[in-house]
Image 1 (cartoon, rainbow, N blue to C red):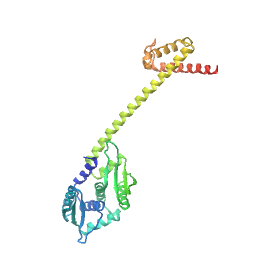
Image 2: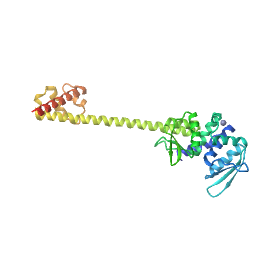
Image 3: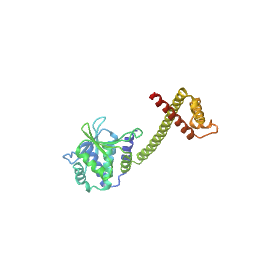
Image 4: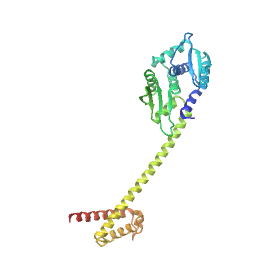
Length: 298
Ligand SMILES: [Zn+2]
């Protein structure tokens, strides 16, 4: 199953304690999915493309809200759920579809509004590949209502218009975790946190490897430069122009081309450390440079 589906499954499986939350959840889902046409007989109709979702909402409406409801199967794919809400529900529905009196909505209900938004319009990419949560909304009014909810939870988002739909993006992993926490998708939240730790460990290992590769490259480049300098001195002036210690280091460097500076130090009499060798090789570079400069002047 996809990560988004897992989250939706978790939303559908949470118990709703209060009628106010159940009304808000259902009303918003209705607005997002079907618009909010009230029929002459005061019934509301939902069309579902999934029998599983229809069954869920039928049970939900009967158990949580105690409204009369029934499902008609239209064809092999679609079924229609009709229910008869009370006046209070119609008020909630009107307030939500007109985004009115947002401040009056209880905090507990706001959690359920966020759940309904995710269920009807939310999507999360596979977090192993990238962190991205998005909500695709059909109207500017609904988008503004959604922004009020996100702002009330202090969730950071960006927005864009994509193929004439209003899309809200949440890209930061901390913010995605915050949303999962609010909508009480506990298992998905834990899974995301695990993936995050795994990804961070992998990134750190990669960083260390990159760093080691860079060090090796630097060492190899320096070694080539030193060998070139030493060969140049040998060709132009011979090693006799060098002091005893410089000449010894120069000879060892070109004899043991792949040896590290410490290994060269171990071959000296007496043994010296790598910074001694490094200093001597720098001096050889300078000597070669001076010979080159004098050659140019001639
Ligand atoms: Zn509530």
